[in-house]
Length: 278
Ligand SMILES: [Fe+2]
Image (cartoon, rainbow, N blue to C red):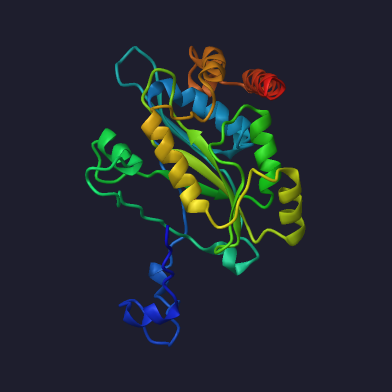
């Protein structure tokens, strides 16, 4: 795979470079920050995704910024339409960490060649599909451990993208047992890893990370998953069923701390058993 970097000279031809000789200078009304991302899920996933936000993403009840209900059929009681979880807050002190980016990918393979990107789009009957959301953490290894301990599946080892000075890891896809793969997953990343951290990473697992192959690493991994028809889920089917059993007869607002604790204990137990079996 060949990367052609668009450097500063390209800015000259960009229509939005107004005034100033710096192409980074754009009108303020065009300076976007991620406000929120909206995820559609099947009902089977709704409560389990709430549990995942509470356990894996570390959200407390007060991080649920809203939860909206509606009684569609009179007498049948309220249904939860949507909830929003605050997964982070605050500006980063480092200006380069305040970038907001959208990466666009197309199926660039010839028409007669398999492409997981094309498969994802076609299976959604969609011209566009949000594939992954990248969440930045100040300590990727700590998050990685936390998530692995709770049974989260990652499709890549911790990868390093030297050109961007970032380390990153990609999860399995969000879908529930019996459903086709969704094509939606998370990336977790840390920018500007220190020399010391890179050393630690290299020592911890020599084979599990490699330089400068990040996009190809993810792309290649996804391609082989889609060709084999075995797409790794965010959490194993077995663990999903354990969580679903805990919450399936509840409304999302009825999932209390006792249930969350039981869910997390089950996840830790599952993660431990998996680790021991490896
Ligand atoms: Fe990404």
